[in-house]
Structures are given as C-alpha cells and as structure tokens.
Length: 315
Ligand SMILES: [Zn+2]
Image (cartoon, rainbow, N blue to C red; front, side, top):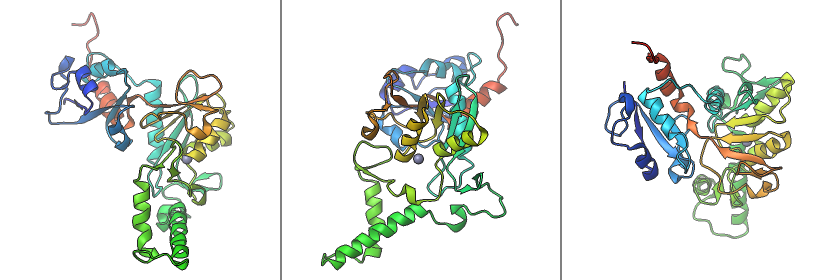
C-alpha cells in the first residue's frame, strides 16, 4: 500500500516534488489509488477549513518536517511520533469521547518529558467530572438535542428583532423567520471568529451553555488529581476561545499549541500576556501545531510499525 501526499500549496509541491515518487516506493502525487495525506502550511488560507479528523500533515512557511515526511511515507527509516504528535493525538482521542452538539474538541496537558498528565474534552459536567456514554442518568446536551448557548443566542437575537419591529422598524419577515438566516450570515461573515482580533465574536454566548470546554476540562482534570499545571504545555485540537485563553494565561502554562492556522498577531485583548512568537519573555506562546495531524497518525505511524526495516549489516 502506498500513501499519496497531496497539496494545493505551490511551495510544498515544489519542496516535495509532487507528481514524482518518493524514496522507498512511497508514492507522492495525486494519481494513485489509496490513502492520501494532505500537506498544508500553517500560514495558508486553505488550512482554515481543515478539520482535525482529516489526514493532514502540517508544515510552516520554512517547510518544517517535510524531509522527515518524505522518509516517513517512503519507509526509508524507522520514524516514531514526536512529542507534539503524540500529545495532539492524545488530545484528539479525548475529543472523540465528546458528544457536544457543535463538535468535539480535545486537550492534553503535557510535561517536559512529553508525558500526558491530564486530558480534557468538551462535554457537559457531572459532579466530579463529565458525563460518559452509557451513564444511566445521562444528561448531556446530545440527550436533549439542545445546546443552551446556541439557544440563548437565537432567543436573544429574535428578541432584539421583535424590539426593533416594536419600535416601528419594518422587517422583511417575522423575527422568528429571520433569526436563523441572520445568525448563519453572521457566523460566515468576516467579522465573526473564534479567538479573533477585534471583530464580533461568534461565541459571545458561550457562558450561557452547559458544556465545559476541553481546555478547562483538562485543567480541572489536573486539579482533581492534584497535578500542578504551571509550566505545562497544552495541546488542543482547535484554537482556544476567549474564555479558555484567559484561564490558560492565568494557569501559567508554558505554551499552548493548537491545531489550525497561525494567528497573525497575539489576540489583541491579551497582547500583554499572549504571544504568537516563541521568544517573547513574560508572554505565553500560542502557536500552531506542526507535524503529523491526528487524522493521519494511525495511517502513517501504524504503517511504519507494520513495516519490516532492514537494519544496517543485515542481509
Ligand atoms: Zn473554550
């Protein structure tokens, strides 16, 4: 079985020589049958729409890790996951246990040795933790089919439209028929974002929901177990929202690594304590993950594990 590497990024295509064949027989190109791994750069727009489930390899503007990727796919030498890849995969594993109605997110807290010391997933809390599938008294959002934060947002906007109508404004349709399309347009507009730089936040109603976000769940998991969190690194399968980010700053984490495109600048509201660079003293780096994404982890490393490598000196 070969694995194809594909990319829409010219820089990556040139660097990997896409269309040719990688050393060791691992096909590199877009014309083979079989699994594909998409190679994306943290600074490219195409990365914005990518999901954690996709088989991705993430590089940066300098092409970090691309030579290793060639060896990994080409089976030219035995390669095992990096600390970051291991940690992000663990975070992804946590995300899979979430039934949150707006999608699963996972987080892993990692110490200097690369050991995962706490995990978290976005899910409704129950006393002393969060609900699990199969719990007898399951009261997750998925059971009721309602996400309280989304509902609060809808109700609020609908009420504002009603008030506008009450003030004499002529609306193109009744408020209850306008609200869905209005929110959809808002979420897809340029002013809407997760972490963001000053536009209108899509998540303003998060505090009215029931779920504990993955980042917070990981911090609470550590607290329940008596694990100090200052100096740990967090890996999270999405860019942290505003609420989580402020708590991660406060917790004294050494660094937060997120799946998804690089932020262009430190979120303006925490410019005093968060940096998107690696080397600003007194600020917590918030940096994009690079390497084998969790959706390609088993494919690439499992293939490595099943392959028999001939060690030097053997015949
Ligand atoms: Zn959050």
